[in-house]
Image (cartoon, rainbow, N blue to C red; front, side, top):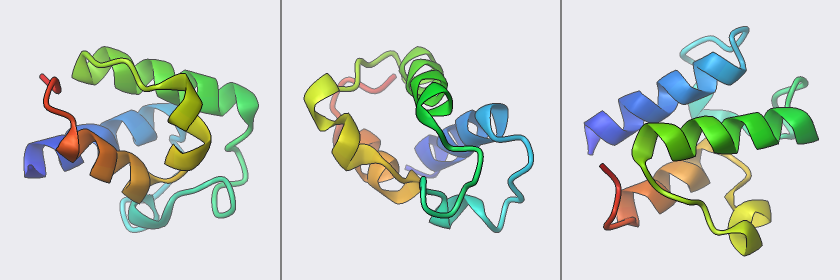
Length: 80
């Protein structure tokens, strides 16, 4: 599961290059100034491409943080 975490961290760094590694675990729209609707759409796209999954549109509002996305991906059976 550390692989999933490391890959997700890279997704976040691709979309939010100003984040430090220490800031990533707490990243959310409340803590990342650059996290707007466009950045969110980009992040979703990057994650879906990296992990070969489709994040459920109806759950995206609930997956608005690094930790929630990590939990979701770690429980997703189709993650590659």
